[in-house]
Length: 267
Ligand code: ATP
Image (cartoon, rainbow, N blue to C red; front, side, top):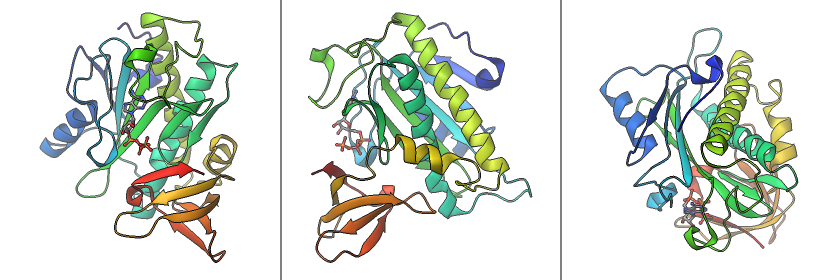
């Protein structure tokens, strides 16, 4: 994979020919010593990709991109981000990946299924995995992106790849364009979010999410561990990045955190 990235996006970026999981590389490095904010690890051959809750992320060699970014936000006054605000970082990554995918398949409807799936016409093309590091001051955000998986390589009927969706670029050019766009978007959104004191409204992140998140307005079934399924209408996202759901049974609005959700289905 060649990577003609802009300097801003390429700082602290390493391309590995093969690795188990790009998230694991950064998590291990961070447990061994300090890792700079916005360190990036990329591979086109991720052999043991993970989803949430121990699920598998399918990534055939050469057909998929895996990219992980370590974020260690420090607010302008010098203090670390409050834990409640960390919920916004995976959503910021979701917005960045949604924009990147949009730019590669502009004729399609591209949206973010809260909290961590990017979809093309309702089919999953990218999944994001956020792992908060011990100490609670940094997060590793992993993204898997289906570049050129064929129908036979896709793990579920509700998934797709950029190539199957008619992306005009191919091979290394597609990987480079996707990576460059994702990192450039992520860098810009993250920098503004932190500079503006982790305020999702002032930084424009909330507005972009309203535009791109296809979950808002849907009837949803949210599976929660050790609790009954939550059935209702997704009505928005709260100040901590949690999904607000108006319960069908009694009209009460509850907020669910990404980390607590086993599955979210549209009804
Ligand atoms: P789900 O997609 O089942 O609602 P989720 O959105 O939380 O769950 P993750 O746990 O983040 O998904 O990702 C793993 C899931 O994604 C797997 O269970 C599988 O259904 C799906 N998956 C795995 N590999 C791919 C891929 N390359 N493309 C699309 N979907 C994939």
